[in-house]
Length: 160
Image 1: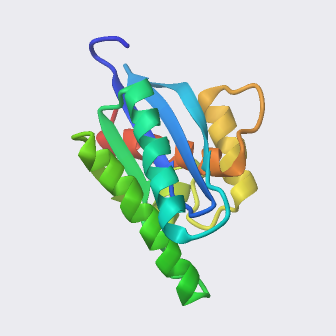
Image 2: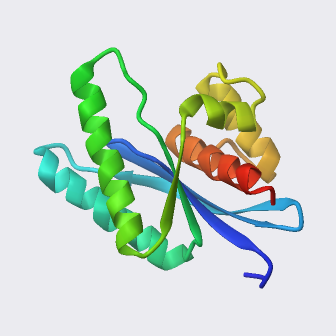
């Protein structure tokens, strides 16, 4: 990593699949570093949350970001789903803070606006624009694309 670059980890929290995306920004350019998903095994919530924590901690240790950006919870149609999502989000934040990283939070609309140009973009539009912005050969997996979009949004907010 260059001395003047900044590495950002974006996290799209979920209890079944938590997407992550790492980008590096320097001199007005954004470069793809890594992305993927932490997939949990079905079952009780506590062990799934522990899997998310361990998975994200491993990502942080492997890619050493300076910033972490996490999507804020939106109120879903199902309050139970929103609560579970909040738990996954809390674990993502806890893993980041335990690794002594500052956490920045962004509303889904703001992320879509930053990447696609409209806060009402759908998932396929986000995937397409992430692929275009980062010059990827193929479409990233949906949750990973969302995480990369969150990281890109943070880079834009930093003005890099």
